[in-house]
Image (tube, rainbow, N blue to C red; front, top):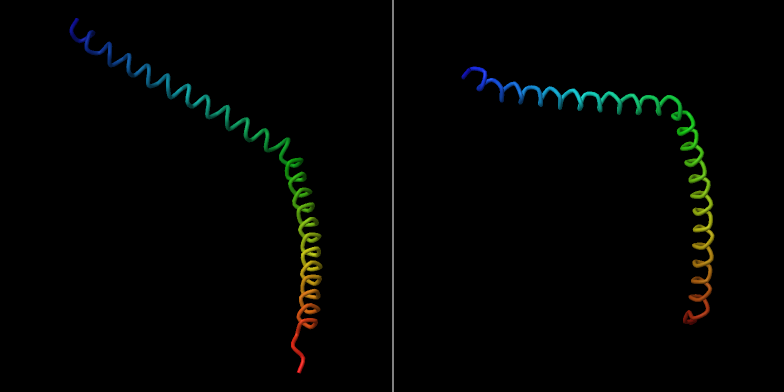
Length: 90
């Protein structure tokens, strides 16, 4: 009897630990399946969407760069006009 009493909590702990690992393993397997399935079916569309988004960002950044250069030119032209206008002439 004593042997059965001592091993009963030990068996209970082993069953709990094995159950935990079984549930944890099942969750990991399901998560991996979901990740790999979403990668196969939606991956091509997602990468195409990302590529399109990057192209749009590049186009917008080129436009912004051109506008910045135009503004720099306007500011520098006005600055040179003002410095020439208020320059001390000998």
